[in-house]
Amino acid sequence: MNREVVLCENAGFCFGADRGFNAVKNAIEEGIPIYTYGPILNNSFIVKGFEEKGVRVVNDFSELANLPKGKIIIRSHGVSKAEFDKLQESGFEVFDATCPFVKRIHRIVAKESEEGSEIIVVGNPKHPEVCGIVGWSHNGATVIENSEEADKFSFAPDKKYCVVSQTTFNRNKFQEIVELLEKRSYNILVMNTICDATSIRQTEAEALSKRAELMIVIGDKASSNSKKLYEICKANCDQTYFIQELSDIVGRLPKVSGLVGITAGASTPKYIIEEVQSYVRNDV
Ligand code: F3S
Image (cartoon, rainbow, N blue to C red; front, top):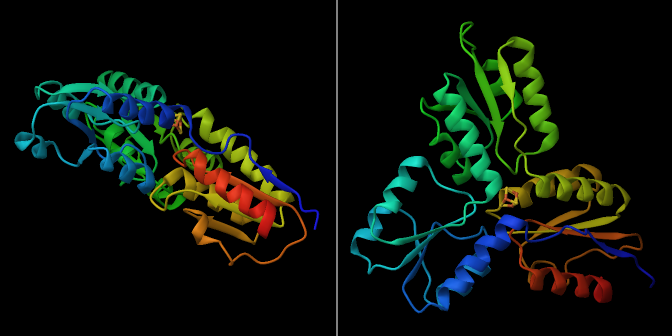
């Protein structure tokens, strides 16, 4: 059967994920104890692979007290200001692999809150990137995740507000939330801090899923940007599958004659994408 299989051009590792991955890969060669502050990427295959090479994931600052000194790598999601300062003073060598796009949000939040603005972060309140962003504000922040929360948010008439977004937030939902907020406050500065890698990946996935009969999204279940890709594709293509690795679909995909589209989240390793692509070309 002559089936068309199309892989999105920007599927897989983004700039920030690549940087974090390489930071750990290069550090392993130094022969000193290596730690990552939280899993380096939202991908259990990668984390496990590094663990097998001696890299240890530290989930809380207090764990460092009993560990031999070495290098600790801050992942691309970033950390709060308090954690950042504590790590710098910990006696461990710190490599800051916070993605520059996340660093930019930290700077905006620190500056605007220092100048008196209330900070609103549009994103998932439980996501480590969002927790980190909130922690750079001088006076706390409100996290808004959906339109209902935006509707309920009560503005103080005499205050200025600054809105930023989690880098991996869905563009359309961000726009919706911002419109709701702007309707009720004049003193609001909106900074769209959704990163280009995410927007481009989402736009490509949206276009491809409109043409596809079957769509495959590859990503770890814990990866927020992969879940967003799934939502976008599912809205356009009913037969959308969210998988972590090839074995999730082997023998389980329906036979289709139309186009099969593939995309992958920012922390999906290339070899998994290649395996899935080759399977789909030959076996679906
Ligand atoms: Fe950075 Fe964007 Fe990736 S913020 S970590 S390049 S998704």
